[in-house]
Amino acid sequence: MNTFRRLLAAISCATVLAAAPAWACGGFFCFTQPVDQSAERILYVHKDGKMTVHIQISYTGDDKSFSWLLPLQKPPVGGGLQPSSDTVFQLLEQATTPQFQLNWKNTNECNVPMCQFASAGGGGETINEGGVKVLLEENVGPYKAVVISGENGSEIVKWLNDNKYIQPKATEGLIDTYAKQKFVFLALQLQKDKGAGDLVPIAVTLDENTPCLPIRLTALATAPDMPIVAWVLDKARAIPKNYLHVEINDAVVDWLSGGNNYKTVVTKAVDLGSGHAFLTEMARKTKDVPIQFAQDSWKASDYEGIKDPADFMAMMFKNQLPRTSQLQGLIKKYIKKDAKFTAVTDQEFYSCIQNYKSDMGGGKCKEYYDSVVALGFDGKAFAKDLNDFLIVPLQQLNADYKAVPYITRLYTTLSANEMTKDPLFATNPDLPDVSNVHSAEATPICDAGSKQATKAKLKFADGTEITYDMPKNTVGQCGNFGGGSPAFGKGTAAIKTEGGQALRKVQVLDEKGPALDIDQSVADKVDAQLNFAKPGTASLTEEFRKSLPPVKWDPYAKGNPGTTGTTGTTTTGGTAAKDSSGCTSGTGANGSNWLAILALLTGLVVWRRRAL
Image 1 (tube, rainbow, N blue to C red):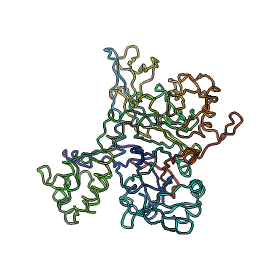
Image 2: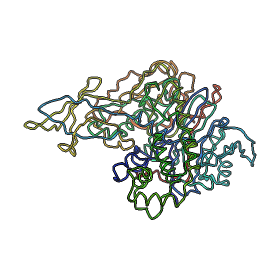
Image 3: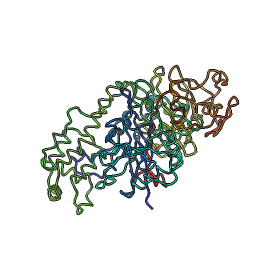
Image 4: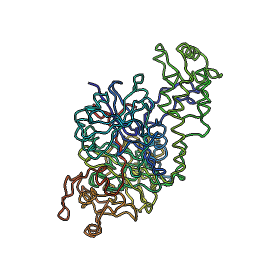
């Protein structure tokens, strides 16, 4: 049985390779940013009344079995399907990942062990085939893409399977739900001459204003507490419209180990917030978060006439093209490594090719270079792929980033039993910015007669002071407990219970006004009311707001207060409030067509993390 893996907006990064000649770290196989591959990542760009969504697609399995499905409220606008680049997500991660910084007080009598921690288009003829209509069919990068519509799930799944966009029987019910709400479906398969190594992200542009994530389909095959990261580029700070909003209690984060329990903390906070909640990890003006996705000077013509592989790589390095696995994949595709050099690391081999014509090459490098020339090098085809899959999409996003005023990073974790309604997102210009940098003051504490710190007292922004034990496996071995960024998805260590509860606040955010703090005891009740939230209208009635109890939640309380998870049905004011269909709930009632976005690689039986 083939094992498939489906990821949304995940970054694909190669393993850092073994040491090579000193000049190798100037090459394309020297640096990548390792991130968790089990997370779904997606970028929404709202500009000029249209929504462009960048989605990373990763897959392992038989090339011929690859298929991918995306429900959309309506077909992409003309030219609305384009290749994207994994550099998008790598640069977003570098600029927005949460950081935990400790400011140590200097003491002469008590020394701190020093350690470094890691950073955590519509158009064309409509073809009618039975109950399924083909609205669009075109090649997009390595993909054969179709947009179809149908009356019911069984007809759609049959058509997809008949046309080799393989879907399991289990998807029929949920596809039927979207079909009855008049959704259309974008399906991808690889072109005949393409393989899994040719996969690239895809960008979809729609005539929409409000993004939505139909997460219910993902519940068919997911791991517990699946991380989801959504970046939103828009006019103001993005908010979850029909989900609650939570803030975490920094005091339960393991600062002394680089935030290595971050995911555990967020998951617990989300669970205490009804299981349907997002955390704002960063929200700032784009001008204050400089991200250079591309250089304006990049152009395909720099490469089109180059016939020598060493000259081609030298030009890419001169132009400072991004060192990502996507570019590495193109290098491997066009600058082929002979099978007899299988034991040679990519770092050594390709650094040799890159530097062969300089005085830094030599020795075995000539043998490597000669083998590449013997296998043939197509610089013109390489230049075209560079242009289509890297230069054009990154320059377009770079222009969009300069034009759109605000960036928000939202994060949650969801298990299958919590994927019962589709998150809607909106914006609120009245809410404050949110920094991704958390900071605390730290004072080392030594045992009597010792100059080596065994404890640390942390003072947080609200003045709370809590003492923690130093990690035993690093005491006396290394130094600089300066904090760091939680390696995304790896932060699964236990909560620091001496800090109290993972949840600091649970809130309702709306399109205007300040956040509404609610008590954790009514999180499920409020969540049920949010099932009926629609963009452009107040999420809660004034009567319901007045019925809420005062907030008594104490984030520093010890023990295990509160309840966790979601409730399927909650009775409020005599009305049974069931989990809504989210993206499809209320569509048409206020005249808005909401963007629905989901990637489904079928045949998924186990959610697995890619080995880095």
